[in-house]
Image (cartoon, rainbow, N blue to C red; front, side, top):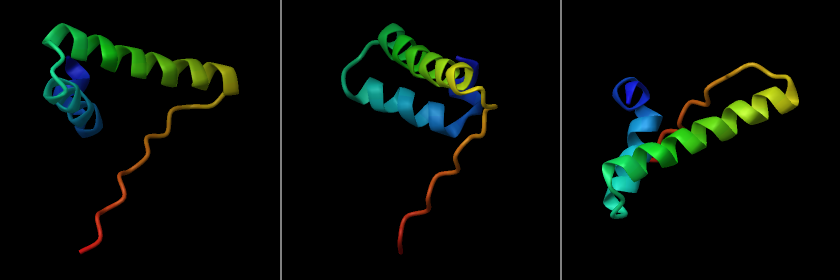
Length: 59
């Protein structure tokens, strides 16, 4: 839940899952799985975490 409060990307992902009809627990678990996939890729590729900044929408 800390990432939902502090990270805008995580917050959007959580809210998207909630609007898809997932319960709070299901949305948090989906977010945790997503974060775990990122962690596994970092270990596999021996890289450090570098968050991607969202691309601003065209006016």
